[in-house]
Each structure stands twice: as C-alpha cells, then as structure tokens.
Length: 258
Image (cartoon, rainbow, N blue to C red; front, top):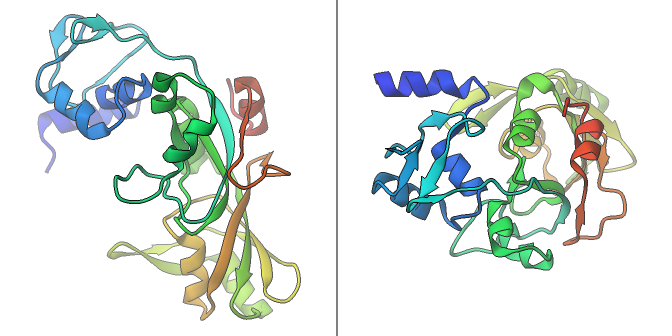
C-alpha cells in the first residue's frame, strides 16, 4: 500500500526529475550512499532553502537550488568511460570485496569526479567485458529502460555443445527464476561459432540472465564476456583498461537523442 508521499514520488519518477539522493551522489559529495542518506535525514540538505529529509524526494535539478551544509551543490561535468571489466570484481560498492570502483584510481580525475561515477548495466562478479561508467543519469536511464531495446551482445563458453532445438527454445522465450518469481525472457539471438562457443544478443538484462537461460536447457555457462552495448564495441580495449568517450559519440552510437 503506497503512502501519499510514495505515490507522488512515483509520479515524479516518470518525469525527467531526479531524487535528492541520486543528485547528491552524482555531485561527488559522498563516497557512500549511507552517508548521503544520513545527511539528508539529519536535515543538512535544503532545496530552495527548504529542508528536505526524504532521500527519495524528486525535484527538477535544473530549476531548483540545492545546498549541503549551507553550501551550493554544483553539478559536475558529465563524464563517459568505456571499461573492460576483469573477472572477480563487483559492480556495486562493497567494503569487503573487490569492486570496479577500486580501479577508478587509474583515471586521472579529481576525487569528487571519481565519486560521482557509477556503472551502467552491471555485470556479475565472474563476468568480464564492456561496462559504461558515467555520472550522466539520463544516459543510464535510457540504457536500462527496456522500452529502448538496446541490444547487449555476449560471448559465452558453454560446458557442452547445444543442439539447434534448444537454441530455438532460448531464442523464442524461456522461463527463468528472478528472485522468488518466474520470469519469461524476451526473444534473443544466439549464434554458435564452433563447438561450445556462442554469441548471445539480448535487449534486456536481468541478473545472471544468460547463465540462467542455459541452466534452464540443461547446459552451463563457464565463461562470459560482454562485447558490445548497442553499437559500442569492446574492440581492443584490454582487460582492466578505461577509455574516455565523448557525450556526442556515446549518444550517437546508442541511437539516443542528445
């Protein structure tokens, strides 16, 4: 049951507004979302001189003035990086495990700019390949929005060869478990490139989706690498290497309006 506040916030989510927590995290003022939320709840943040204590308060950041500890919060320049993620790293922040954020020191940027960056379209810990790292919330929303049907292509090594009948099942649709619910995948494209190797192209990205799809037909993915997002290719980017890309180029390659 939604409260009145939750209902209003949900409506705002559907617009171009941003939550206060998102805005502050993308400003580079905080390294951890926990600290950001604590500052908001303790009354340290104002919007147009009004104290806001709800982290999910949605507002138009282009029209309203945000202050933290009575100092104006200025938006940082938008940054865009391609990254070839190594296996063994999480895409979310963690105090106990290795994360891709620990590798951002390889980029020569001010601390605030680094803290504003986050991954778009996470990869599993043991999956390698292409990640987009940015502080552009609009781009992030566009890539992860299923309606835009941005295709992600993966290279997989399977435990055993797969026959054409099972490929047809996977390409059409198949039910997998997402949390405690059953989920029917959308159509995809699978290209077998010899023996146990395959390319899989999907326009969605549920957690561990490709691995669960092959599990459902009695096979197992033993290696997985994302090679492209839309028309953005991994190409010769080495594992663990970053490459900066311009706003115009990334929007153009994803067929998004800038």
